[in-house]
Amino acid sequence: MSRETLDRLSGLALMAAFVLSLTGGLLHPIVDHESHSATSISHPGFPVAHLLVFLGGAFLLMGLPGLYARIAPRAGILGLVGFALYFLANATIVQGFAAYEAFVAPVLASDPATSGVLESDGALTASAPFALLQGLGGVALMLGMLLLGISIVRSRIFPAWAGALLAAAPVVLLVPVPETPVLTGLLIEAPRGLAVAAIGYALFNRRRSEGPSEVSPFSGKEPTRVSNQLT
Image 1: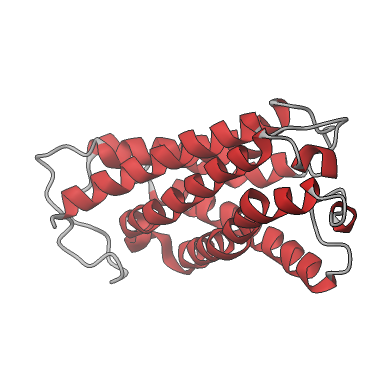
Image 2 (image 1 turned 90 degrees about the vertical axis):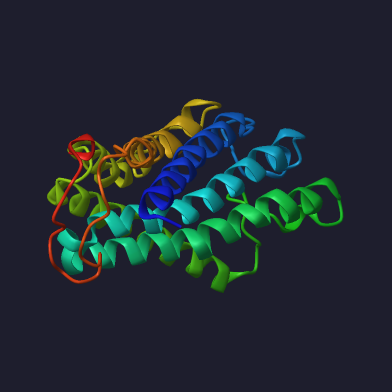
């Protein structure tokens, strides 16, 4: 498979990730300003929304290596750490929690015998290790977005605004806004999703006349040719 084909497939995956995750975020039911109460989780739209988020995360994981391969020659250690944190946080914590909320939590919430074990944040009442893991994963996710976004800006391979938006996305996640249908989904999914979708579009639209880089993306050397469409 050619480098051009891999770039285009990575670009498609990143754009699909944005559409699926954003749609899931917008459809996420929120009842009485609680997005993970037993009432919200038992809503018929809850598993559908999280299935879309889960699928969006799967496409994100398929596309991220292609993104990193393009910036690796200029990203340095900062980019590598940012990519590793963002990829691993999504592959473990984010995807694991999305799968739990799509397939497990609705079953617990719909049964009166088990609905009481759910906290308002969707966690299991007595699961301190789960809460700790979720907290550490959240820190890794936000730090990964920040470092990867900065590396994208510094690489000058993709649009600088996309990297800046990805780096700023963690700040949006920390804004104390009351949970509201549609708005909460936009705040969580739109900034980072739009950033990776813009990069995916740039990858997908690489000019056919541009040949693959003549150096390994992990060699630490700058590529000999960079498409004008990616700058």
